[in-house]
Structure formats: structure tokens, C-alpha cells
Length: 213
Image (cartoon, rainbow, N blue to C red; front, side, top):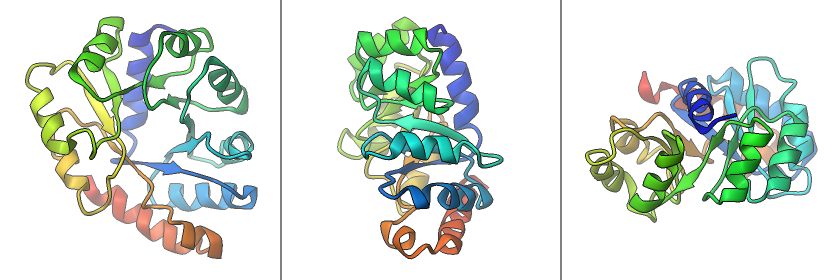
């Protein structure tokens, strides 16, 4: 799958809702009800980070939830891409980008949101055809002000910024022309997950879904 097609599909996924939940799942029992709660609240695109032992199984379980579009985050190696695709991931997200990782996404036909944090990284990905990118770590790398500035010389690229974004500063990003959506973990707090308070998570999801209402 060519980078241009990957970005076209990534843009469609980013357009589903203003927020893509970034999820760290430690307990498989949380996977399906968490996905159901987030989708019910209006956040269908879900990023499950490959940071835990059960992440791939969580992707499999969450992919069964009607209306959900489940992706794999923290892709670092070609093996991660292969495993994520086999688990049913519909898209991938990486903190940065290497040639081997990009080649793997092309080979396994997994639409990727490749990570970039500098103008040179953004330009290098654009040269290859990636017009939709992840900006990470967003707040630490310059935040909304940086993305507003980069939009003038590089208007061809749209972003999903992730890292340090919360309900408090979400609109700073979403109000920018070159932002398709944002990634955030605040919609699935660990405390609510531990208690099985899925109703609370649905409320947070609905609040996030309304950010561009």
C-alpha cells in the first residue's frame, strides 16, 4: 500500500471524531466494555498501544465491537506491524518513523500515522507521500503554536497531535486548519477502568466527541 493511500485512509479514520482515544490496556477484561463505552460516547476510532502483554489480544477483542475502528499504537518494528495487522488492526500509529517501519506498513497494507516532531521529519515523510502524520510529543515539541506555524510553509500536511493533550487544551489544537483530530488518554482514566465504571467513560467520550460540535 502506497503512502498516499495510507494517508487517504488515515484521513478518513481521523475524520470519524475529533478525538482518538490512546489506550493502555493491562487487563483483558477491560477491552471489550471499554471499546463499547467509547463507541457509545461517539469515539469510534481507538488506538490500542502495544505497551502491554495483552495489547494484541485486546485489539482482537475490541475489533468485534460494532462501530469501532481499532488501530495499534506504539509501532516500533516490522514485527509490530505484522502482529498488529494479524490481530485485526485497521490502522497503525508510530511515535517516529524509520524506513524499515514504513516498508513494513506498505508490505502488510496497514495505513500508518507516522510520527514526526520537526520540520525536517515532516518534510521527509511528505516526500514519500505521507500527507497525514502524527505530531508527537505534541506539547513537549511545541504544541499548538508550533503546528500553527508549520502550517504556513508546509500546508500539504495534516496532523493528529498526541502527547500532553487534555480537555483543557484540546480546542487549541482542533481550531487549527491543519489538525484532523487529536489523540488523548484522558477519556479512559485508569481509575474508571479499574472500577468498571464504563458509564463514566461514555460521558467523557461524549464530551470529547462534542469538541467540534
